[in-house]
Amino acid sequence: MAKRDYYEVLGIDRNADISEVKRAYRRLAMEYHPDRNPDDPNAEEKFKEASEAFDVLSNDDKRHRYDQFGHQGVEGMASGFNPFANGAGLHDILNNLDSVFGDMFQDVRHSRRRGLEERGSDLQYSLSISLEQAVKGDKIQVKIPTYRSCGDCHGSGAARGSSRTTCTDCNGTGMLQSRQDFFFVQRTCGRCRGAGEVLENPCEQCRGQGRIHTERELSITIPPGVDQGTRLRLSGEGQSGLRGGPPGDLYVEFSVKPHKVFERQNNNLLCEVPITFTQAALGSEVEIPTLQGHVKLRIPAETQTGKLFRLRGRGVPSLRGGGRGDLLCRVVVETPVKLSSHQRELLEELESTVKSSKRHTPRGSSFFKSVKEFIDRITPS
Image (cartoon, rainbow, N blue to C red; front, side, top):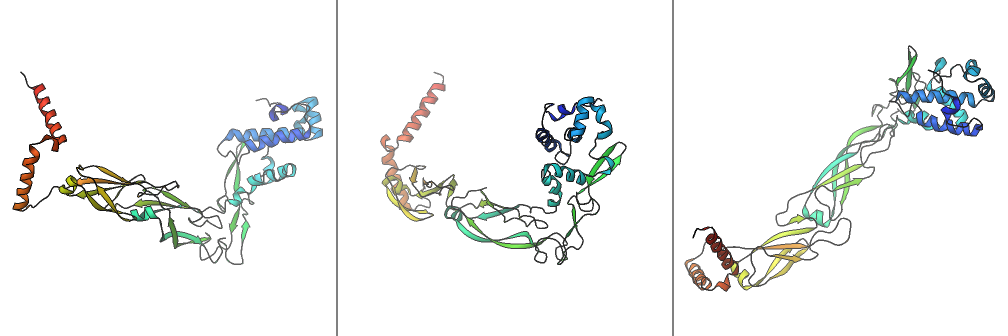
């Protein structure tokens, strides 16, 4: 396949100066560099093509001959420029590019060395708390299985008096190259595992890992207003990093235990208040439990079962601030049981007086009236 015009490859005009040539190549090299596109074979070809064009157009003599005679004029000089030709490794290629672009590829060249350090894993911890703790907040001590930085090597993984050395198998690049027919294949160095450095004398305490397994006691502050499934992130409280890497984070997920009295509905609390038949009919004042203490609730006369009373500000505080919910009290009228003979007589007397007047049971009268009308409609005349 015919080679593309070098100016077209770099996307520049034929009278572009050397600074424009460098800028164009810098952009393409950063975009198509093999280390940035390990799974894209086309990227490596485009990188080679751009490197070949830059090799010619950045050299005054080669560029002059190319402008006069085209590709044939520089064939002997460029030799079909291949970044991996003549046994040149990626380490050598990047050093040559550094001479032109300074530290442009510094992050690429040293990324594998940085790979020796590894960030610690994030930890997940489930914490079961009471409703009182969820509403009021609390501070508790927990023990978390984790890793900590090795005290003998201070997290480096190297024994005292020793340090990391450049891997001799890959010369610090973290990659090995081999030739297969007309292609050069790169693979991760097995000795240093792509880090570019090895530990000749690893720490005996942590076996070169830079951390050891332990159980850590941690104080966790429960913010008021947490709910079932709320997650709290504690930065840097996760597992220690490998070989001096930064620690991970700890994620605490809250589970709120069921309460005997209260049921939570968002930021409101719901409770059932049992009252007697006479309290519902005549009215009364009852004592209501709240998470802040007991309060008095006035029950008006003729209260029906299921009626809700709202005590404002007696619920759960908002986790993000901005007030708190309410306490909703649902009245449940209890039917008396295990009546004495005298109590039964009194109720029977009351029933006879109530039954004779529809105004005492408006809902019941309305219900039976509706039932009668329904039966009349479906019964054939």
